Image (cartoon, rainbow, N blue to C red; front, side, top):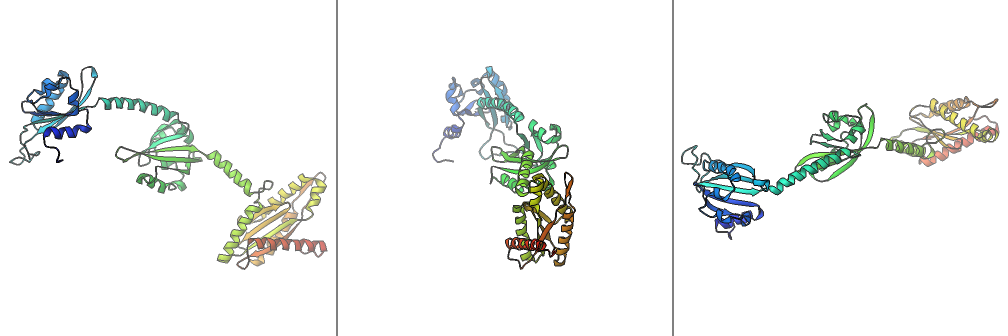
Length: 433
């Protein structure tokens, strides 16, 4: 007990300071006031009716006392009961809690002189609380809830509420459109049921952080299955709703279909890394792959081969038959190289009429065999130009990529030089291949 409080009135008043709409009433077995206190007493037009010795029933309107009297008599019998009641004209809503007042030290069942005997109540204690504002607030909340449902349903972003086990509780029209599922179908499923298996655990750490309160929300890209079984990409934003005590209630998830954006990004990445004419790797991507191979060769001793291929007299094709004929020849050579090589081999157009091939896991003896085969398959490519059929020829230079190679850049230089040696030998009439 606080040392500054000495009387029951002071204790009650201090207690009710935070409840300005409450009354605390103590009555005897004759239902007469022993004590009445509380801020709300000051607003009573007939506060004298609450004085000690007055009948409790005389202090309240008949409509309220008809509800309150049975509670008071139950308190004298040792029971604690509660009711709510409107005053006449529905001006005030009162919450009435009434319980027994026992002798000092007396408890509940089993606290009397004999086991199971309950000491009789010497009176009762009633707390009357005006909850009108709260009731009005609930009505306002109901209106807000209706407004929320309208906004939720009309939101252009797919939105849903999920319980803590990840089951859909409520979904809007946009989410159904994105996924292709109906409301009834989604609300029988879990979030993970429509998530691509490889992405189910992608946001596991973020979800744990959300539950632990370390983060307020998170956003992640994941793949999902729509109702037709197709795979779609979505950006999902997740937050957690908590109750007044901070305990988790449910998740809010928003999904934005980014499949078209992902396709566009993939197309742009392809354009950045591939030759637009032939569809082969371009120089930038090929040199990146070559650097990776050189690193593996140094670290693990892998042996690979790099070939640089240059078409002979290609300028004559462009000058004599036009650039379309030249483009057709480049496309034909690119297709022939792709068909001839293994899936693990990498083919690129470095620019102009120059191609490159990276052959991983090949022995030194096999390099020349592959080079001869590529020269033959290139020669079979035919390009019709009016009455003329053009057959390209190529000069191929190669270099081994192994642990002794200084680096990818040197490999390109060496292979290029080897190719020019082959070309010079052809021009000199030696027939070197």
